[in-house]
Image 1: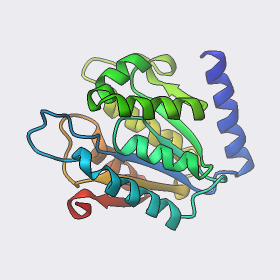
Image 2: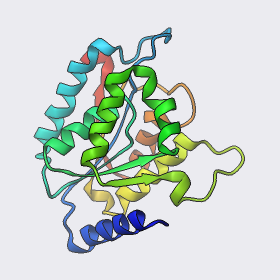
Image 3: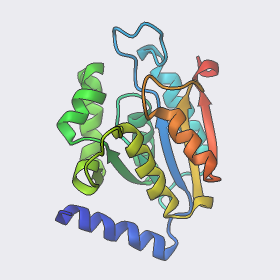
Length: 205
């Protein structure tokens, strides 16, 4: 573990021991649709609706400086959620399944320069970053990085106390395009007795 990871671990430990995490907002949501996506799921023009829905639920939950937010940082729901949490002073933890450049290629850059700029905005303001290949053992045969990072985030959220978890998801309630995805994390939270708030995209737009 590198020095930054050690510092981040100390910060998380202090929060748990001091009972500072009043609520833990665990997030998962659809990425912005790629230009060649045949079945629309999160069209780019729906971004304002998604942003408003995320901000509304955070306000309803009274999100603030005594809370923790755990998320990845893909274009779409993740970055909109993290932006909203940063603006409310929530302590944010970011978890990536790949090293940064690989993650950007797989989960950000295809949506255009604007989303890469959002990622960099978040990077400048959030100090608590966790890169799965740096902190966990290599994937075993048959394991999926996106599924594993979901379970890692859920485990880190549960470490603050499962009763404190407020899972927020921007989701169409369908299975994803592959392993991992929002349904995978939603099911893990429900099995762990956490509370889920589904921002149902089939109703939002």
